[in-house]
Image 1 (tube, rainbow over the protein chains, first blue to last red):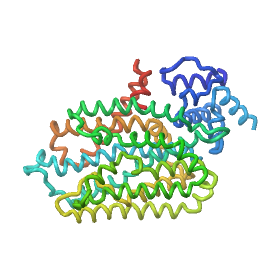
Image 2 (cartoon, chains in turn red, brown; image 1 turned 90 degrees about the vertical axis):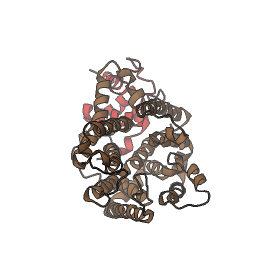
Image 3 (cartoon, rainbow over the protein chains, first blue to last red; image 1 turned 180 degrees about the vertical axis):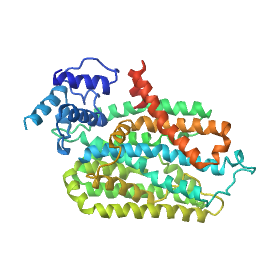
Image 4 (tube, each protein chain N blue to C red; image 1 turned 135 degrees about the vertical axis):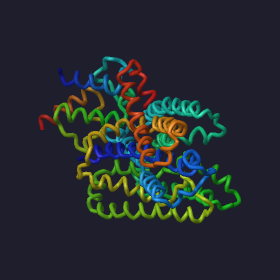
Length: 82
Length: 361
């Protein structure tokens, strides 16, 4: 499964719990759309750390890095590539 | 572990304290107001004042009192995260989203509680007091477009103003607790209900400041961590002593569980900062605490009716257990924590799953 699909599945199943669309626009702002509040953001970060084996430092916990599915994917790739 | 992740643990710890705190209140109720269910006495009966179980419950209840301040501290921190990065997101859109997310569960559980206890609210306080943390949080979200820039640019003045307001608002209630008949006391109480924003403003503001000045805080905390630990211990003792002094001052019988002393503020702040200062220390059951932390709103909402139902059931069905605080507390705590977690788990796995957010936040 691709990184985008993994992230989308997590958001749809674990954060939205089936209360929203089953498909998300990968460029849609998850924050502006009200999908990610702060606690959901931290849960997403927990998922990213566990699923993709990256460590998110305190300074990296900013909305920009998790703004959308694509932004999250870019962040994961950036962390993996050092 | 980073401070941000540590805060979810603090949230989990606070969520754990909520049912403990409420169970203790019912424990005191069983000691003094339901005594006739297990002893041949008239109620209220204060024979158990000063006994070991009384002190154990009182002290443990005081120690749990950091829960709501910690929730607000964490909420302030988490909200401020949204102002970081290329552009601040703490704007009207985010604020209205947050409030709209809080309102359905608040209204639902408030209504459910009234139906459960068969009471018609007679004042605004009746409606807003039981879930006062949510009422406060909504007010802080409304204030956040001003609080966050203030915290960014002049954090010292924000903390001083917030601390003064908080102590003043809480201080207004002191004469009431002590039974001092002052002119205008009624008006003072009307002006300072515990659900009005000044009463916990410092805790929320501190969370915002810590988030926005994380670099400085991360350098400062290790230097003062033992001092913070000492502050936790000293303020815990002070809090218990303050309660006992107030109780003796009142003299007649018992001051009651709603008394909040000024030392509680020092204790709650010390606990929050100390928890972060020792973020390198691994906690047992950290994974479970994180899980509980992510469900803190649901626990906060559902523990009140869960404990109420079980306490009333025990009052009718097993009155002998009211006189055994070890059994009584264990059952209430299990109900207050296990009940909400079970409900949430059932909701997540059932067809009601899409409604989960509206019920448990």
